[in-house]
Length: 186
Image (tube, rainbow, N blue to C red; front, side):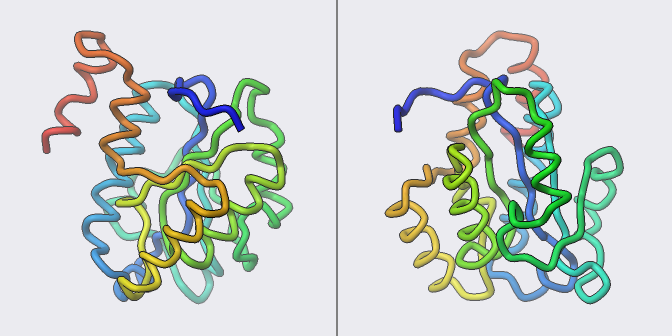
């Protein structure tokens, strides 16, 4: 795998399962939610594709309110699979992404289950998983940390939201940077 700086045209943001009933039990859920919001804003400003999933919506319900209100225009298949790419509807959405997309930026829950398995599915498809370490979590801090370690060892790129946002922006002074600035310093 060749590693280089990211460019928006090579990325898709994939949000996985930050549903209200699940997030009530997630370690540092407010941090995860805030960083997912920042990533959403960045993806929109940079005109990156965005897709999302729910895990068994009938049982776990909708996303946390601050995210639910921002999801109206984003495809969000419901799944029972832990690897989102094992879900036929999700896989079809990934297949329809532009050929230039080589990286899935993963955010959501849980680090050691759905994020991990989706990252493995991403690698199997020949794409690069970029796991946003502070935009993912688990019910316990230990499972979150062990999940991040396993993801990194397996070949996923792991780093914080601010790192990826600045990497995608590339430079200060652009209209995109100015549009994103209120979301970075908030």
